[in-house]
Image (cartoon, rainbow, N blue to C red):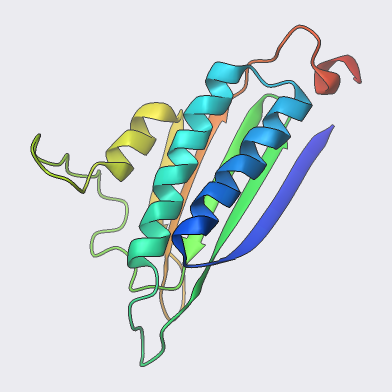
Length: 150
């Protein structure tokens, strides 16, 4: 069994917790191990917070007020993608530079890399926007509905 959902969210702080709660609820219902669910929810929170903060800067004279979150739970893997319509990354595919220890911002992408198994950081084709996608191999609880349904 596979689970897939996509959200089109306003670039507001409240949307970050909405996406996180939906992911956690989906994973709990599916029977994903709570530690794996927590790691993915923190990574999702960081990616969404970046989209809210940076994803709506003016691109070609337009300002975007929304971003998209898509999640796939398929077999042994979960893939999450967060895409915005901002200016994108100045250096797509570059490894994030860790923030200074006393910095209040700049840790999100490094944290995502630590929590996920594979991370792709890039720009959308066309007029602009950033895409952060990451995946993680899932572990299941013993009584997982997705694992027992097979």
